[in-house]
Each structure stands twice: as C-alpha cells, then as structure tokens.
Length: 179
Image (tube, rainbow, N blue to C red; front, top):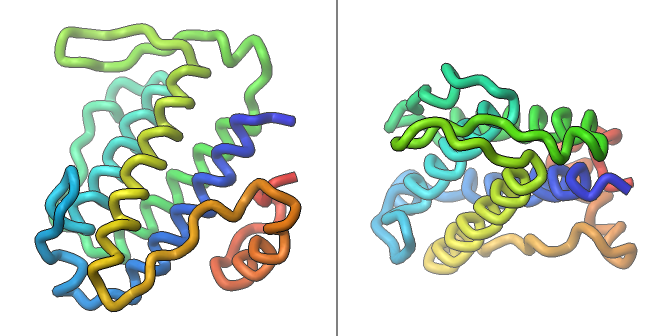
C-alpha cells in the first residue's frame, strides 16, 4: 500500500467534505470573526490553500511557484476550485512515488534561503498542516447554523458505505478512492 497516496486521498476527501459544508454558509458566517489561529473561516481556508500551493511547488522543485502569492480576496467558490485542483495534483504526485523518490530531497524557499527537505517528511508536514487547520475550521463551523462534517470516516472498512455516498455527493473520481 502506498501510504502517502492514501493520505493524499484522505486529504482530498476531508477537504471536499469541509468545503461542501462551508458552501452552505452565508457570506456573513463565512467571513465572521471567530476564535482560531486565523480570525475567520475565510482566512483559514485561504491559509490552507496558500500553504498547499507552496508545498506542492516545493515537492515539484518549482521555485517560481513557491514565491507566488495568492489573492487575498478570493470567493469561496474560487477557493474550492483551486483547492480541488491542488488536491488532484497532490494525489497524482503521490501516485508516482516509489521508495527511492521518498528519500530524495527538494529545495524549499525560506527567508534564510533554500532549505533541502526529504520528500517523505515534507509530505508528512503537508498532511499534518491540513489536519490541523481543517480541525480549526471544523470548530469554527460549530458556531454557525451549518453542522461541522464528520472528517474521520475514511480508512476503516466499516466506513466504506459513507465513502460511497460521498463519492456521489462530492463527485469523487472513482479511481481516487482508497484502494
């Protein structure tokens, strides 16, 4: 089993579930000041997108893309489209991984210069970052009229039925589900 691919697929599933819930918010709920590392659902989702874009560029050794700055005022629909595209790219990246590739190092642009990081550790960081900030949005949703979605029903066989219903509702490509 390619565990990094499974994590990328879980990442896509959780993002789609969370973003689907956020699409049900009113604009006022979406931008309202809330308690969290970032002050709103909007700002937290923008941060997730920005960091995913940065690290996917790093994983692909694309220094120019690592320095791209996202627009500050994107609509939620734009965020959903861009996040979905990044999630697809992360899955494609992980599908190509083999053991030698995981131990390779790539350059990450930092204020102090280029830092060389192992691909496997960089991927673990990306997944942890996603989980961390999705959890914050999940908590912020608790203060709205939209119920926070369940985000931990992916890996277990007993959750297969839930994944199947999401495949239809969230338009998952059938080949990207956990194998």
